[in-house]
Image (tube, rainbow, N blue to C red; front, side, top):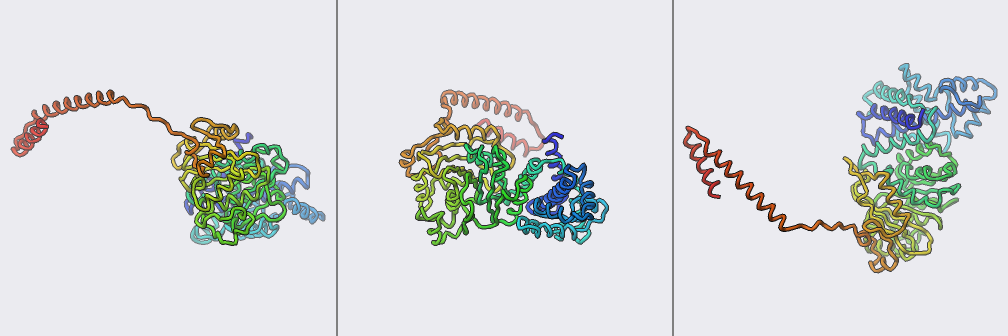
Length: 533
């Protein structure tokens, strides 16, 4: 089956799963059920395929055949050895009666027991710290699923039957991962404002990633860091553009626990092995991470919450991330705290790309001091103005700031991409054509009238270190000159047309008659008024 066809089939099955829950709760809640149960199916199917491969060194024709082979081998003396081998490779073991294949059979025979599914979740969570609390957001006993035990159980049972139609045996990790990504994007669209914490639109992700990976595509063991990783989609984009995707090391942190769980599932579904993912549930600004092993990275990608509040306590002035700047980002706007955190963790020859509101380009006080220091150090490499209304959680226009750790010059490339979009019903979108034109301007690093300007450090200094894009890229379109004679002639024509129409109307009124004297009196008054004008 062609990859795109397989991917479409998978997406439509998963989407029908969403339909089962859509009438019962909003997308922000049902995404946890759907994505969690899809993930359990992935773990279970992968496990059975791996077991069969270890027994027969082959791929099973069906999951049922794999399950039967697993049951048989558990009767053998070598069962313990096999179980140990699977555990070391998969990091978990699933008992035969807790496999998704068993649950789907039970659901079809109306004998499904959700206690068994809960037990299955618990077993996975306890098998390895990698999976700790992974299914915590899935409440199999929630009233949202229906009123009473039977209805709740039926809802989960229907979901299991529908998702069982997804053929993971014949879908590679990329197809499944992409289908998962697609669902996450659809949930973001449905949940609107709530989606900001877990989703960066693909067009923005593509620009950020292609900019940050430029010149590092061939690197084996490329390290990527996103300290506000959401569902991990931005991190995983690196796979698409690296020539050594299997060796990428992913580092990410996320404050929201549900979103952090989503990112962990997303990594596995994209085939990222446990050794290559270091993800953490925590507050990026309050406690620096990572602080041991690798602490700086080839690529830093960020779409932090815009102008979020943070503590900004005086102690942070001694924090290595911020101590060089003498001031802290204001309490009411953590934008520069996020930026400096990311820059601190960037390797000397790496690239960082961060999405921020335009205010960071021109606001004064502490932010102005931090910006000046960054510019004097040559850290700010480019500023790209994006179109408004690209994001699900805000309609404000945003910008991408590109940073480098150490470089020769201190010039800054400004790109105005604010008009490069297609209007949509809810959101604006950037097409591949728009994205490619932004990347071309970025790579050429030259002044292009109305689109880009390469500003020298002197230009920026003259502007008091204000980086507001219109100061550098003039995209003003001159209005067409107006011919006053044409306008006056047009007005005269309209007046003459109006007079002609009015005369015709008065003639028609004069032809009207009525036996009612009051009506005739009013009619004569109206005619008199119109002729008197």
